[in-house]
Image (cartoon, rainbow, N blue to C red; front, top):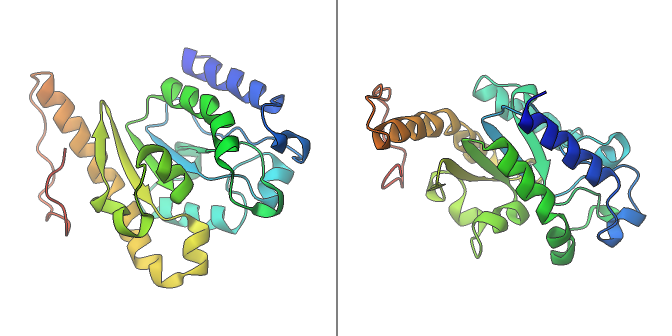
Length: 216
C-alpha cells in the first residue's frame, strides 16, 4: 500500500467514527469518499443523499448516474477518479450543509487533497465551489470562466448533477464544462514542464474556448 493509499484509508476510518458535529447522530453510514490513491482528478460534491447514506458511497443515486455519463464524455469511469464531498455525513432531509458542519469536515477533505495531490479538482455545486472560489456564483463562473491554477493543481467549477437534473437547460453547458478536463490537465502538464526548464509536447491545435483569456 502506498503512503497516499494508507493516508486515505486512515482518513476513511476516522470519518467512520467522527462525532465532530451533530450529523453523526442522524447518519446511517459516513461517506468518506472513494477512488484510487493515484487519481489525477478529484471531484468534490456537497454532501451524501439518502442512497449515499444507506450505502456509504458517494454519488450512487441519480446524480451519480449523471456524473458517470459526464465522465464517459471524456473517456473516464468513476473508478479512475476520486469522489468526495465537503461533508461526509448526510444532512437530514437532504438539506444544505451548515457552515459549522462544513468546517467540522474540512480537515478530512484537506487531508484527502494533500494525500492525492490531484492535477485537477472539479467542484460540483456551490458549497464545494465556495471552498475554493469564495464569493463566486456558480452560474457566473462555471466552466472556463472560473478556471484557476494554484501551485500544481487546476480548479474547475462545475454544476452539481442534481442541479442539472432539475434544470435540464443547463445540460449543454455542463457537458461543455466537463469536456474541458483533458485539455486543462494537458495544459497544466505543459506549463509544469516549461517551469522546470524541460521541453514539452505542444498541445493539440484546438480553438480557444469562449470567454477564455489565458490558460494559467
